[in-house]
Image (cartoon, rainbow, N blue to C red; front, side, top):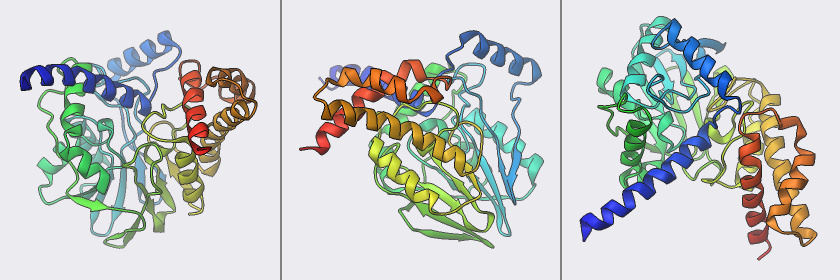
Length: 336
């Protein structure tokens, strides 16, 4: 009986993980453009990505837009480096053992100093399964994640992500195992690493219920995780519109000069405001439909008129309808 249950549950879990993964970074609308980017990347190098400086003592490697596949070995997020007087701090090192090794090789091109700490922004495995490579190279490294993230890994979420990555990369991520955070953090926690202050921000369920945003105080930088994506439409099914909007409102009060999204180009507060604008317009369309006693399917027509500024963002055509329905459900729930 246990084997039968396991056979039923595993495919369902994999499907849920796939939806969560595309939540992080939807595929490009232009298939030929994506293929050209992948082909070009392969011709340059097996790992044609490097870190670029975005602020004082802060570097980001901006990952590719396509979903995990055998060529990119699962890489798709934005790993970050912060240099402190005590060593290097890594934010979201990547999605697999292989990606982690490549990221570490690129870290060495920025600094030969040891990595002393890692922050994982949330449960989605494309951001943190590369912890394994970091831990192997630096056994004493401290890895920080939200309390809820540690609990979800304990419940098996990490193993599900490993299986999904193995499937999507067709075995190119083989050997990746779960190495989760070993230090739980929550909102307002202050962590000093040498001369640098890392302030944790969590405002409840936003992109997920496991999110942290990491403010690097002296550098005036915030690593947003997937609470904000840059120039791309998210999936929102693991979080809430109102929760995500509230989290963005709160993090903007930090007054940081530089914001690093989970996916897409780094920017200033205007990038963050643009993403918040999309979420707000979809939610307002749902409110309008509800107030006019329309059906959830009517949100799409309303939001199409109000979100035209976002129509060229990858994922717009595919996700606008489902997001309108989700927002309508949230509006409806708020009324009762």
